[in-house]
Image (cartoon, rainbow, N blue to C red; front, side, top):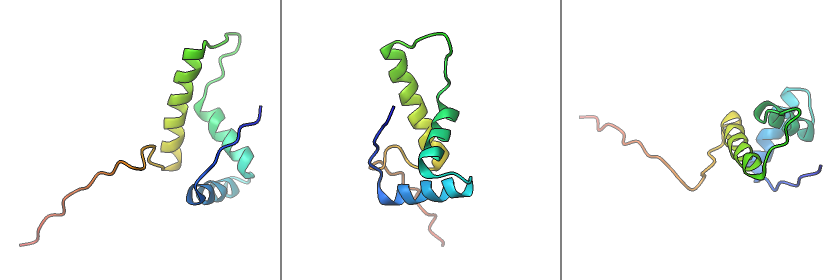
Length: 84
């Protein structure tokens, strides 16, 4: 199966760097990340709902594994203490 993913250039650069650090090219590294995050259930086919749940969970885990906020428009701000 072939999947095309459009990545922002900063994310692509980060993934390429991580792939090289592991001695892999980008497609091999992405496959490695997915295999770590999505358990293969031998002998049992997943229902569409189960596949969707597994995909959502693996996507969230993959974002955390590579340090990307899965909600890039959402920001958290911490108020700095005012030195007196």
